[in-house]
Amino acid sequence: MTTANSRVRLIFIRHGQSEANKVFELICGQSKRLKYQKLNFDYILCSTAMRAKQTAELALKLTDMDLSKLVLSDALLEQSQGDWEGKNRYLCYSADIMTQMNDLHIEFTPPNGESIRMVQKRAVNFLKPYIEQAKQRSIEETREISIAIFGHANCIRSIIQYYLELNPKYTWLIGQQNTAMSEILFNEHGTALVKVNDAAHLTFPIPGSSEEN
Image 1 (cartoon, rainbow, N blue to C red):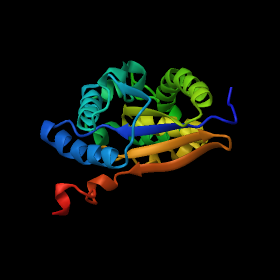
Image 2: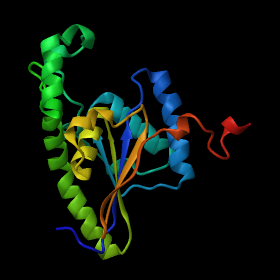
Image 3: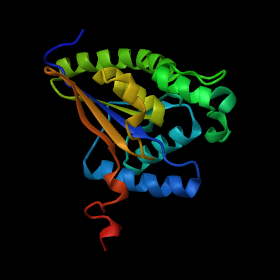
Image 4: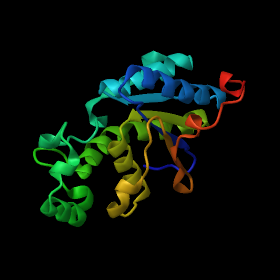
């Protein structure tokens, strides 16, 4: 049950690229930003996929956050593309498939895969108990509670669409760059989008970092 005196912030962090050197380069910028903003997470949730886990572990290590808080879950995995996994999407998207995608939007399911709606259902069901627990902690400790979620583009899009009650048709337009951050705030006024696809750490130097020199 939503309580007027609670404040809970969801901080979504998309994973870095799969190549090791690129992961380190991108996450270093992300981590410097987390440290500069003095962010500290009360709950840290992460997909079991290697690229998400690697992003989370490196970010937490570089910011001196408690690695023991990290909770891994298959519920935060990226959308399964089924028979399309590893294939060129342009070769999969026939005229009939495109019509189905345009008609069904997030309900469209790749052959033997998952729809974004399926991804949304498993992810939200996993998150709800944490959010309710965080709201209770917020009341008891009279402070804002933060939940970091390290995950994937379509999974993050689906969660944002659910909580903001956006038109499902435009879910795919919610941008999600590698290592981008998005935030949702639950408070006495309801649910608010604080920021989405914020990747400023990839473009602008963090004060005090070597990039300024």
